[in-house]
Image 1 (cartoon, helix red, strand yellow):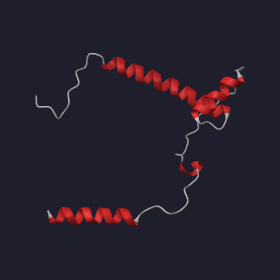
Image 2 (cartoon, helix red, strand yellow; image 1 turned 135 degrees about the horizontal axis):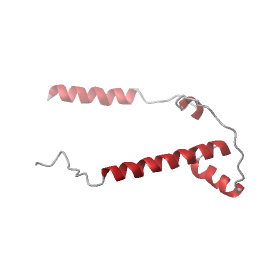
Image 3 (cartoon, one colour; image 1 turned 90 degrees about the horizontal axis):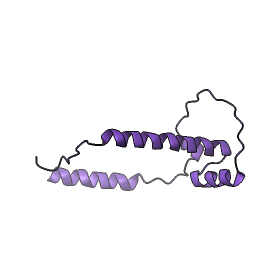
Image 4 (tube, helix red, strand yellow; image 1 turned 30 degrees about the vertical axis):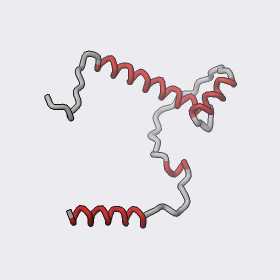
Length: 99
């Protein structure tokens, strides 16, 4: 019990002395490195109001970033749907329950 108390005291003390006081890194510095793949140049005629709304909703700085995020969301949605369909009929049980 004493060891647990000492460990808890250490963790709490360590947590208090390690509070972050410096300036936060910019968004660019915090992002993971992006692996670039081949790109293609395309021209699309999109309604400006829809593009601006998507930029705001997705937090994108540019139209290209908004389109890329929207495409990522579309692919992710398909993966969720496919995964859900694959799980249909699978019985899930909590590990906390006794058999």
